[in-house]
Image (cartoon, rainbow, N blue to C red):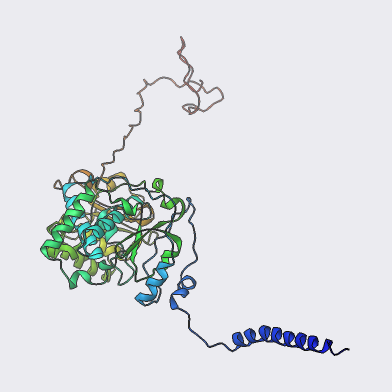
Length: 431
């Protein structure tokens, strides 16, 4: 090798050394990197359920509200990573409450309590919450009364659909008169057709400082203040899915009685007595459900219990059952002991209660023949049965028996058509 080749070889060796260092050093840095914690909010996707679009043939489940364990700052950071849906967001149809005056008064105050306790004394936020309540009422996955929607799950200590209804908020804070008046005005407008368009057909919402587990399977469609609004992905979030209607019989919510006159009627002594009597009867085992139908009660109403107290009585019997039927009679001698009922038992039934969240139905009915104060949709439909009398045989004059001709005398073939009249009557036993 000549002298002129040596410098070139040295340069080549240096370049190889630099290249080797460039390849090795990053590997060493990665292998010995400091354990830098990542933001906790990224774990929300792993902690929550996998996203799923429920097909039209399957009713989407309504999950109890549960939150991913995050600090408010972590939740806000995570929520910012969730994009808004780019699909159309049409406004809902106007909703006109067409129930009785009594039901509407109860619905109005249930809705007012919902919007005020959920959104605070904020007019825009209250309108958004009111729209969600009415959207739920029209959707087959939810109850079909306003109070039923707002107070769904209130019997739980946690996991109710609207948090204020089960976290003790109603006993800790009662709204100032001005705030309650405005909430009632907003509720009244919503029940008379006013639509809050920005939230479209949203059925869920949450504040931006929490992350519910259900969020993964819904589309984020709007923000109103600090609240984020969602609808179900796929067909269940489209306008045709919102095709159900209000059913009569808004339940009394005793927790609203301190500031709602509409919810005081069912909280008098008779109502409390009904609950106490039911609790005692259940404890004593005298009003157990049917052995063959564990969600069905056939009972005799306690003496002295006013008709207004019957719903509380039924609710106490049903307890936490998801599906429940209560059929009640005033007279123990008329009370049925099994199903199906016969005609007399149906006619003498005094009261019935039925709930089935799967079809969005909860109904309270009275026998308005016995209790004429209850009218219209709160009355049981009277069922009638046409009884066809059996034909009375026409007496035949006695005559000398005619000898048989191969068939038993007096026997008719039920399926044979009646023959046309003949000049001479047939011999007995012939046709």
